[in-house]
Image (tube, rainbow, N blue to C red; front, side, top):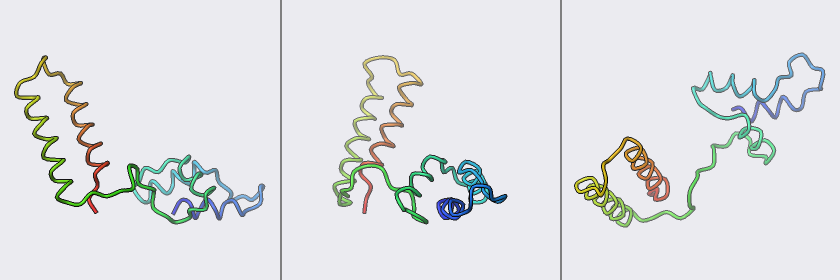
Length: 113
């Protein structure tokens, strides 16, 4: 939605009263759609010609079959449980945060098709 409005805005003459900055357009769209699109990303999509497209997904292009993903997820969660059961050093909030970050990265990397 923001990219389409930015493209229409670019077609307006420089001194047109309805012309807005990209930041203003994205802010309005974020309020309407309850999203958090950044002006930089929207401008990049317009520049690349990706009008009215969903944001590109991060991570590898390959998709793992469900049994392999489940096995990897189980192995990693078992590793985390064993680490927490007998830690080499006292667990801290910082370590718990890094553990949850690892789980999110694992999920992003191994998205099931």
